[in-house]
Image (cartoon, rainbow over all chains, first blue to last red):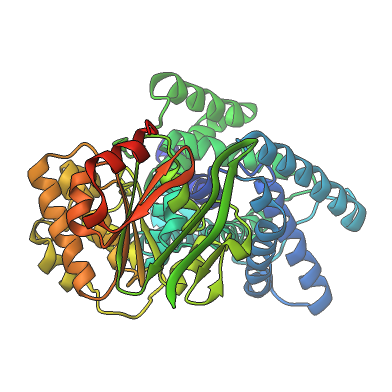
Amino acid sequence: MIWLDTLVQGILLGGLYALFATGLSLIFGVMRLVNLAHGDFSILAAFLAVALVQALGVNPLVALLLVVPVMGALGYGLQRVVLNRLLGRGILPAVLVTFGLSIVIQNGLLETFSADSRRLNPGGIETASLALGGGLAVGWFSLLTFVTALVLLAGLQLLIGRTALGRAFRAASDDGATAALMGIDNGRLYALAMALSLAIVAIAGIALGIRTTFTFASGPDRLLFAFEAVIIGGLGSLWGTLVGGVILGVAQTTGARLSPGWGVLTGHLVFLAVLLLRPSGLFAPSRRVD
Amino acid sequence: MSLLAVHALSAFYGDFQALFDVSLEVAEGETVAVIGANGAGKTTFLRALAGALAVPRATVVFDGQPVGGQAAHRLVDLGIVMVPEGRRIFPSLSVQENLLVGAYRRRPGPWSLDRIYLMFPVLAERRGQPGTNLSGGEQQMLAIGRGLMANPRLLLVDEISLGLAPIVVQSLYQALAGVRDEGTTVLVVEQDVSRVLTMAQRVYCFRKGAVALHDVPARLTHERLAAAYFGTA
């Protein structure tokens, strides 16, 4: 029973990791941009929620409704003003600039909010649990996070598969120069992708802040887990990202069950094993190159 | 007045000059061909017209408006649409999705999915398949259809006969004739000289990035063409 419990907790944790990973995967897929500040943006969103909770006295889940569009707008502006200038010059300029952004965000948060660890308190839901019988119980909030990840991924899948914007994302991902010739404004398209990416990671950051404590320096760990989920699942596959998150989550909870210090390590080992055995990930779409 | 007027267009790739003072005019409804050997600057010329290359604003005038160097999507809004060399079908999109990307700017006009499928029935049969599963000729049909979905006023067509069987090329040119009859102005770049002489109203021959010869097909003798093409005169 304890192992079944571990498995269920790991799967639900995977939902949170999928929320972190989805935006990272999306922007890499659309514009081959590696955003090293991705984790820091999630923590920035969590601190924005902290500030809103303090200033307005609202529930963090209400603050989320404000933080998500703000982070989306930030992503749009960032892409238009800064990141679009770096594209088409190889992967390195964007890596360096987002690495710099990561440092800027961390130090900005340190200056503004101090080094104290914080937590978002949504008023009970974070500790409430649902008994499944047989001594098995799952946290309501973990379940909510997992369902949110499912709904977001399904929505994103529909957006990419069925809408004109989604077709443009895929066309630009295949061949940006030809997409531009077809009338797609790549600069605007990339900005929309970054807006989506940061809006989704804002949800992830606030979910993290409700689940556990965080500090100004919590971003890089989140980035690492997001990378691992994306790579395990396979780049370019949204559902693969969810499975990658779940595998990582289960590995971490299983390791932690064996010994409390082994959780993160076990996650890394599983990630390395996947990288060794299937470098393209478990669900990477096979793409014919013409 | 010309629909398209190019004035002394020069274009560069870094330090390399690919076009030297090219001037060219295309009237509304006309079909004009640009011919020339490999490396004569034909594709560069089309890329400059389609906004894929930075050129001075005043060098390209479309419908009385200077548009040189504008972003490609703005030019598509005006009706300048390119069918690129090598077809450049999007591999992760189905046949139908490739066509729909052509209609991304929602420019109004006569062309629709139904019209494209009527012109190229094979595309309708295979609409759900990945675009790159089609044969070379079918992919070229798809590339032309995708361009038409933008409802162009000026269709730029780059080397559609490249690597295709003569019978396939024949049917593609029949389709282009249909496009012309619709009133769309067509500028084709082609290496297959005999093919364009039957279709174009006027022909420009490029050599080493400049216009070497410009005339109506009836006055283009074999000798004049060879001289312009190879520079042997």
